[in-house]
Image (cartoon, rainbow, N blue to C red; front, top):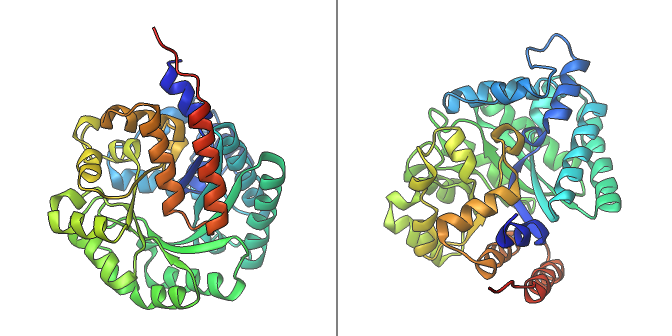
Length: 343
């Protein structure tokens, strides 16, 4: 392990773009598949490597939904959530805003209250046992249409779980225009939730403008196409609207051809607040530490530059001011005390 990789491994971190079901480790996916033998998902963790090799974004969505189908009762939900937090704790992730899609589980027959109670129970246990603070983004699966938007808004606003901080929109962008979801984001924002839709991952900058204009976006999930519009980059930088950048995900889903072509450098050079995230880490064969190492290589960062990325995530998070100050101080203390090895 190089000095930089060792530094990243120990660095206290926050993660802002990571999906609930998409964070299921091969061990957990295989265990769930074995519990539900009617699924086509492999029960051998080794076989999941090939299963999680994606031809394109549409194929990724198909595979992702097959894993969603494995989460069928509240026990599955609780197990998944708790184990995700365990993996985060091993990476020194102190805080994560986990994107959760309640509609998918409720449609599978899990009662809405049971679903919320399961994630909340796991959240409290994770903080107690692993020191990982979890918060929720309730996410509309765009491919499921306005029915899913209505149900997601209902669960969020009627049940109001304690850990809920934001409202999102995921799934395919092509053929799923953002403006149609405006009424649901209006309701969520009026109720005090933050807006964090995916936009510009597999479509152009106009999707990002739509998310800003119609959905009150405070952060943008991915925003990969933003450098195609200099005016958009200027707007994002001026208003400190963060981009939740997920390099390996963009390669795995073919949103970007190669890491060398990834636009993260253009984003940073334009002054945009860039955060680094893992999206669906086991599905993409990555984790947050790996994504930080990739970003460090692409941006030419040393340890202090990597620490700046960690501070970006804290700044862009929906932690309250005292909690932000505490986590930033922890990052600063770790960085200051880091033993730099010299030849």
